Length: 160
Image 1 (cartoon, rainbow, N blue to C red):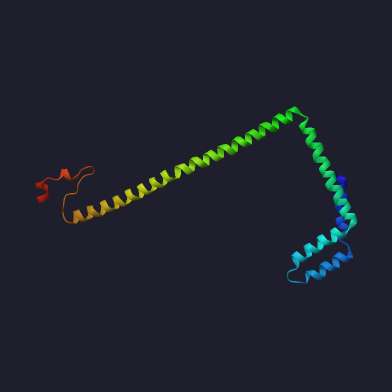
Image 2 (tube, rainbow, N blue to C red):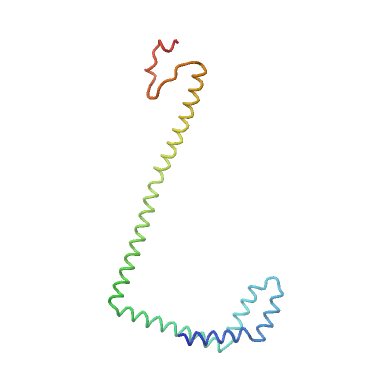
C-alpha cells in the first residue's frame, strides 16, 4: 500500500511541477477569483494524466485489500471480537446515559423556572415590605413583626 501511495504522490508531483501546469496556474493567479479556478484546473490536470490516474487506482485497490485483510485478521481473534463488543456496548450505554441525563434535565427545567419566578416574587415582596416600613416609620406608626397577621392589631393599638 505504501508503494502505491508513493507512486501516486510522485506522479502528482510530476504533474503539478510540469511547465504546462505552472504556466496555466500563473495565468489564473492574475485573476481576482483565481482560487476555485486553480483548484479545478489542478484536478483537471491530474485527471488527464494516465500515469497519475493509474497510480491512484492502484493505491485505492491496495487500501481496500489492506482494510479487508485487517478486518479478517481482527475478526478471527476472539479476544479482539470480545473487546470490540465490550467497547461497542460501553459506547451504547454512554449514549443512553447521556440521553437520560438530558431528559432528566429537561424535566427539571419547569421546576427550576418556577423556583426562579418564586424567588423573584419573594424579592419583590421584600422590597414592597421595606417600602411600606419606610412609610410607616415616617408616619410614626407601629411596624408589625414578621409572622404577625391582621389579628395582631387591636383597636387600641390602631388608635394610637
